[in-house]
Image 1: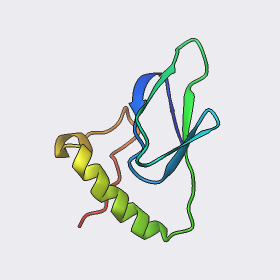
Image 2: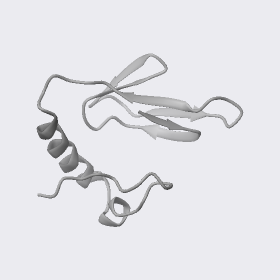
Image 3: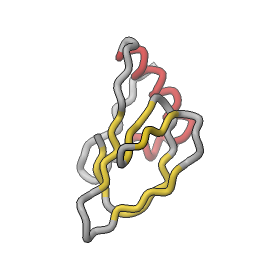
Amino acid sequence: TLCFRGKCLLTCLYGRVEVLGFTIEEGQQPYPLFSPASHCPLTVTALGSTDDARDEMMEASAILRKYLTPAVLDTPLNGLGMIPLVSE
């Protein structure tokens, strides 16, 4: 689960997520999201699957590597820690 305020362009790179009751799957168009500071943060929730979690993590890591630079991957996200990537 990810809660945020502000605006973003949400692209589901792997699996499925739920936002405001709507399911967004990989391969769908990016969705612009806005969560004003005057309201509760918007929540993006990953939806589970029945596959092996370890394989999912490795596959998701490979997809993230295509979209993010190493400098971004090694940077803490607002004190939330590093992005967890599986080393190959």
